[in-house]
Image (cartoon, chains in turn yellow, green):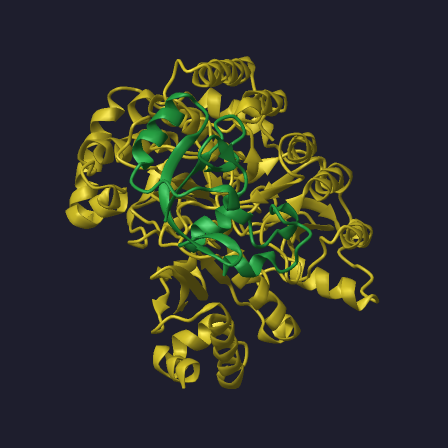
Amino acid sequence: MYKYDQYDQAMVDARVEEFRDQVRRRLDGSLAEEAFRPLRLMNGLYLQLHAYMLRVAVPYGTLNSVQMRALGDIADKYDRGYGHFTTRQNIQYNWIKLEEAADLLADLAKVEMHAIQTSGNCIRNTTSDQFAGAAADEVIDPRPYAELIRQWSTFHPEFSFLPRKFKMAVIASSTDRAAMRLHDIGIEIVRNAAGEIGAAFYVGGGMGRTPMIAPCINAFVPIDQMITYSEACLRVYNRYGRRDNKYKARIKILVHELGKDEYTRQVEEEFAHLLTQGIEPPLAELERIQAHFADPAFETGLSDAIDRTDPDFALWVDRNTHPHKQPGYAIVSISLKPVGGIPGDASADQIRVMGDLALRYSFDELRVTHTQNIVLPHVKQADLYALWQVLQANDLAAANIDRIGDIIACPGLDYCTLANARSIPVAQKISQRMAAKEQEIGELKLKISGCINACGHHHAGHIGILGVDRKGVENYQLLLGGCEGADTSLGQITGPGFDEDGIVGAVERATDFYLAQRADGERFLDTYRRIGMAPFKEAIYG
Amino acid sequence: MKILTGNDLKSGAVTWWDGTEWSLHVEDAVDVGEHADPVIAREQAARRVTGAYAIDAARDAQGIRPAHIKERIRALGPTVRPDLTLKPADPEAGNWVI
């Protein structure tokens, strides 16, 4: 994986000391809160419901065991012994003290991490496929391109004050595991008929109060022009994106209002101009980055056979491992969703255990997924049983990836100042209620947001839940039919909302109805798409 | 009644104005009536609190109860982590929020 060079390290170290001085001036009164607030946000430090919250960037979700162990140690040293993995492949700490924040950032910098680009109207931490570099179905490892975007976008002076925040995702597989089309820019690395590598650009997607699926504006940009084309997309947005209304300031609104064709025309015009400016990084820089992402030293001649006599282990293998490009290896997903647990939360000890397992079994690599789980990308099949036993001993062996218990949930009103309703208790109750039926139901992605900002991706859930505030009382809307994969779709609201217990019952009625109606091989989403909303609505509301 | 809440500048902890200083406990909050703004201005200028604002609350048999659930969660702590609330030993504490 990528290692900082002297410029990266110097930049991050300087930023820590700059922030240390800003905190000092805030505490001694030299800086008022109005002046300090944007500075702390640019360093990932929010003031949340109970305390300061620090969001730490995990670029494209990739980290090594030293970094993972450091995240665990930080949870103990500066927080209350746990962290929360987010839908942006980041980690958040909920109980940070301002007076200790610079020391925390310094500890992060020692392991080549930071909290830059985790807040503010800039290009945020770029996300990617959690199976990158390991998946059997990818065109090429997308992470070097995500890293190139990180380097281009970090502190980019032209894009440090965009109309709104800006999120990019890069994948290289037709199986979209990163919700790519629900980003401001989604890039799919593709190979054309001539065998050349290029980038398909999807621009203007997003969730929030106005969910939109990004249209493809260019199906093949030569890969050695990817940054230039990205810059053209950003320039048109920066120039014409609305700054008068924050609810209409995202690029999706601009693309929608201009129309895809006119937005694309302007981008192509800007792109033609930028090509004359020579802004694309030299090939040597991409090759330097790619060298960091070379395959580990896989053993060859290994068998894929494993002993499945332990039924709990066999179930976990079926649910939580995916095919690897190298025979004899598997991609392992560690679920952070035990029955009744808090989605995405992990204790300091669990974080360190996962780091240790990465070092021992996965060539020192981990990934944070946008579904709030952890991936060990390169595990020998022969090591799976030993790995699973350690996971079991640490309450990390839930066998439920992509099942109804694998719930995405934002922190909601338990932690977030923006939330209107709690998400986590609803997730816990659904997880408990549905646990016995989980395997029978099969693939079902359930996502919960505590407000319309949609950090819990409720629009993209096969079943989505949106918490709202109804005259000071929590209320939950139910959505069906969302999907974030290659066949991205947006969920539709079923009807009137429910209280906390009512929404759990509504989910159960929806899944019971699915079980009664499904045809052979149909997932919940397939059945919904075949028979439509009306019969589900009848089953839910009676 | 109107009570004042904010966050301790250094620690970020949720605090409540008790008429003299900032308390961690909502039951210490006092009714500031129509005098919220000058208190907020003075206390923020002195850096004893940040992000302060006034909220509606009522006094009942259990003490002072903020009107909105968000403020009750702030007053107690996350309902999903009773061990991290101000009343970790009270299994019924979460009921006060709802």
